[in-house]
Length: 456
Image (cartoon, rainbow, N blue to C red; front, side, top):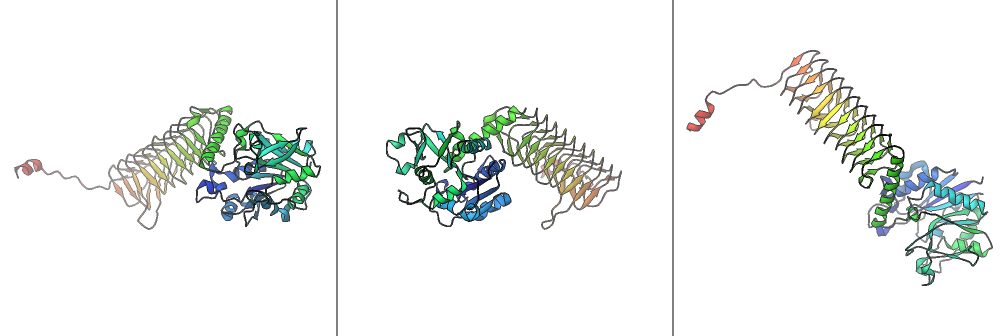
């Protein structure tokens, strides 16, 4: 097997996106387009990946990190000029180079592998990934010779009316013999409508040199979509979302309404879990088996154990154990850790709090910067008063404690094991184990108050 290298074209500004965000960093199903491309390439046996950056270079590097090497295309003089910038890194190496655009997140690793294998089996110097488009407007056309070999690629702007009728299009993805690529790049000229150095001209140069130029026609035109504006971005999102949802369903997940379910490409979901309409699952979230994720729930970068229900709630950057119930209308904020058999009821907010096994916070409560033991009952309307306007403080509620309704626990404070907090109390001091704390004003009744008030 020859050595394989990858070059990712990601230097263009993407003005048609009309955005402050660099084009290839626009997300599709929760991940930037260029990162989809890099991650797909990484599944192949590739020696080196080089990303060509221009506008927004530092942000691209920050996103991809050590997944790639980088070169800068300071001037935007065309795709051939962009690839030339890689010559100091790859120019002298033997092998095959895959060139792919950073705005094509839908091209699957299987398609890349098939392109490479077609290139190798035909002993070609260049192989083009092509597709048949019902409407080829805007794409470079594949012109074939009488023996059906690739003769030339003509860009839309330079094509004649007859050439524009051709439906086989260049997807912008290629395999090249590495040394032949960089030798041909030196011969590319910019005598075209845009005054740019086009990478497809390498194909014509190699063909005229008598080299073998092949084309691999992908059966799925949709996966070759290049994202240049917001409409194409929505198309890419729709296509990838359908692909992701189908994979989960085939793996044993029930998705009630796939059209209205949004799952990140990095999410993992166990079999026999049910995903109801309107659910959004983002980032590297992990959901166990036999779970129910109720309608309009939003889960972000969180881990949820088996047989847990999340009903119409938000869970962000947190861990939830097994056999736990969350919601409806609960908000689990970052750095929370809910154990097994925990109940978080309606209109409960939890932030940076650990709640151990079997504890209940059934409704209308806020727990922030807290540690709750096992089998604790938190009554309705309980608040951990964790912020004094400058600093955050911790509340500890030990095992088997019972906190009555409408209690304020003013941190830092500890509620001891097995202790009780009377309803309506404001607790400012630690409570010993097995004690009852009452911290509320004594009731006083004013006899005949209403009658006297009416006489006035």
